[in-house]
Amino acid sequence: MREQVHVGSLAQLSPVVNFANRMSTAPGQAWGPRTIPDCQLIYVISGQAELALGPERMQLGAGDCVFYGAASPHRLVSSDTDPFTFSSIHFSL
Image (cartoon, rainbow, N blue to C red; front, side, top):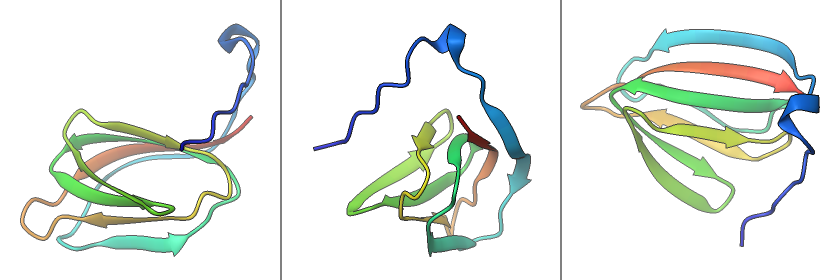
């Protein structure tokens, strides 16, 4: 079961961007396993990757967008055959 967090009205949120980037990865490039102190949005522009978010595994491809909150254990690995390009925003609420 996925945890649901009610953050209130989107119009009343004041997120603080801590880091933003766009990156093309190398085949097999990996981050983690790790946890980070802020929230993250990842948008896949092209290619493929695998995300392990806690015990859940998911394949990501062009057009996919993933959000995870602070202190969420994760590992992100770029495909060996179709490395991905992505945009990412780390932010605090």
